[in-house]
Length: 260
Image (cartoon, rainbow, N blue to C red; front, side, top):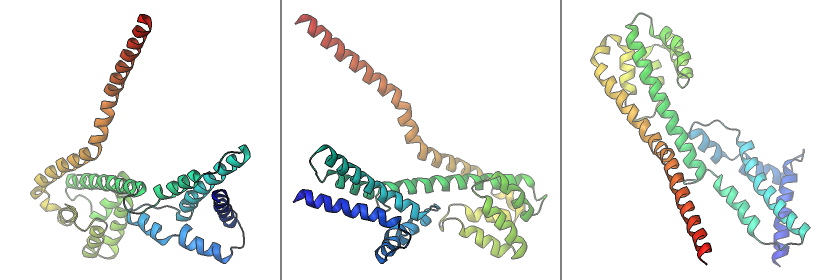
């Protein structure tokens, strides 16, 4: 009975793979493409974290990897006369679960870490942009400055070029309103940045704030990468300790063999 159930599930996986490669999609394939391969929930999750990805390709790799493993495991068992168990199906389900975008999944944690890293990089570029603009002392117009500086800031390049265009076409109020919307709603210093860009003559009033901002940004970056660097720094010491313990155990075993 268990063998028949496993064979039936394997046949379903095989049919699923063949159906994806069929030119004329039957209704069930259209349903699978809409609910699984082109999942709106998965697409919204990636877009919320600012990740551009081919959702159909991502979902196809997930399910085809799980299906391929199940077919390979059961095919090998049938070819060698081994016993069919539910282990490969559980492994396939685990692959699908670990690569999903549901809350508390590994993919969700990875996306959150990548978003935090990108936000820190953008904040660092924003601080550098303000310092560069402060050094200009108003010698060039803001739209020209943004266009010229865009190439030096990869994380802000698109936003600076668009800001330069909007400053010319829509005016500073709407342009800076759009620029602030490109950052989180409760961003720590975006409004101070736009104030400085609007009124360069007030740069000396917030120069001290920029110093504190730079130190705070450095501390946030260190909190992000500090634990990982500490772990990497501890790896050599841990390896040496394990090697010493292993050598001591081997020495004790050799002495024991000599005595006996």
